[in-house]
Length: 424
Ligand SMILES: CC(C)(COP(=O)(O)OP(=O)(O)OC[C@H]1O[C@@H](n2cnc3c(N)ncnc32)[C@H](O)[C@@H]1OP(=O)(O)O)[C@@H](O)C(=O)NCCC(=O)NCCS
Image 1 (cartoon, protein in one colour):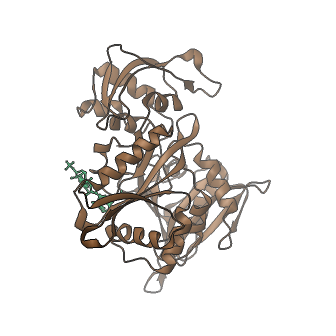
Image 2 (cartoon, protein in one colour):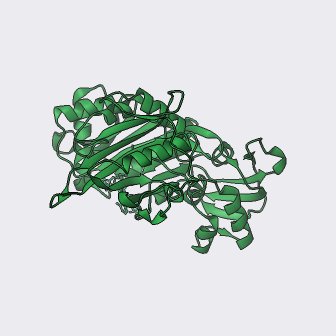
Image 3 (cartoon, protein in one colour):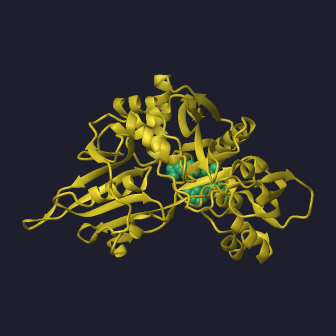
């Protein structure tokens, strides 16, 4: 890095330092300079986070030209529930300073720190797919969008019954929503912790926000009155002539039980004056079409990557999750940053199977001949169960026999596709 550039850590409570840090982070994401309100909100959102800044001191003036924000979070891994993760965000470099290695400098330092602090994983949401492979990240969850023709949504007679009750949630009351989300995020791989600041931000209204201007949240309670699901949706009021043609946009729908899931979809697709329901960032194996008499009432949009994962400690990452298949493979993991290089024996034996069917692996470092040689980004793509080792093998991205690719695919497979409903 050029001598006039230096890296500092920014204290989020330092008002002026946070303002200077927010300028490039908004400019790089094509946003205007921060207002006082933006800064106050940002301070709340980043309290307790690690903020890196690159300063350019050329011509005697000190300006922040690049930023990175990281924080400790929790990620749900297959069969085991949440584990700690270094969440990476706000990676921005001013257009005047791009492609001089500033991202590389900040991110590499943070990944080294995270590994030293004992994190087995780092995670991020990539603005563009080509950026993070070189840093050892791999796409680990995917998401899609749905368009529902409400008039054709009829539930099959054998679908779980919509028992319980529904109620509108007053603005700003998020405690029960947070409790429902916390329950649901622990079950599907890819789920992330939402902290208090996340919910505070969700409660505020405005364009581009969780609830937009005209959104609502409806809570589902089971027969005992316990909250077990919610849907947050925004509506647009349109008509063709005098015929109502409104659209409901589902921003977030979480359900801890099949009854809550059915009740919430049934509710949101039957709002008066609304003909179409759209939902973004939904799992690629959404249950809804299976519940309907006409599954084509649900049209699925493009499938894109969402969460990118990076193993920082290969034995730790492999041991953190559990497995459904059985088998033994020696994996040689190659790391472009040299942080997590390892050769390990992954042994999953039926005798170690728990009552729930998941098996704890024995993971040991070894100098045996590897069955599979793979870059750390490819391993990271496989770890949540959302990527097929057979596909990576066919694409020439992992080096092994066809039989070893089958075994690895079977070992990593999960009953549900990993999904991350939380942006950060
Ligand atoms: C993406 C961004 C942070 C990259 O910062 P940068 O300081 O230019 O990155 P570096 O100079 O460290 O680049 C390292 C390598 O990644 C490559 N790279 C960086 N950004 C890339 C992109 N968007 N697409 C493809 N390659 C990219 C560089 O070409 C370089 O490759 P090389 O080592 O072969 O020369 C910056 O361009 C930016 O702020 N973009 C707008 C906001 C954004 O998209 N942020 C990412 C949020 S997830």
